[in-house]
Length: 221
Image 1 (cartoon, rainbow, N blue to C red):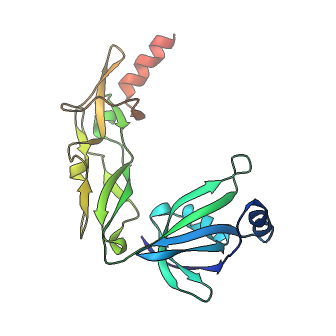
Image 2: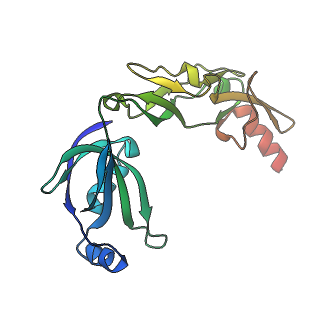
Image 3: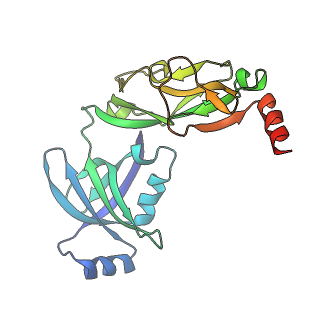
């Protein structure tokens, strides 16, 4: 997703742990800008500004500008970063130059909205097997997320990757039959998936119908 944000960057000529420590004292971190057929440039940037982007609603799919002092102003994305394992401070980032005329592969979050009827009226379980899909698309068309209404889903029904409404230059990566979420029944403690579902490892149970809640209560007693 394109953002009207520009982060200032200063070129750096020295490297090493000592230099990195000095930069962090100045509330800066080392970074590298590369890609688009140009030479990589070592720079320093503000971790505070980068974190604002990483923790925004579009996260790593954000496209923003980096203004390198005495050099270029170019659109980039954060493609790799390193955090301190103890303090969780941002230590280093890699910024990829983005050619706005070329499609790229990105993961887009899928957000189910609503309570499925199969949970409320049929006692089913609503499971999310995947929280995103992968697509090819032009940088300016990268969406923040896909909001999908699942309120009409009944027992045995599922939402597949190919049913997500993509638009513009988007092309789905992977199998359109891949199940994103479904409403399943529970028989003897074993969840029965929608027909045609591949075996999923530890699916996330989001909502449980009233019938199943009552059954669980009886078991505990």
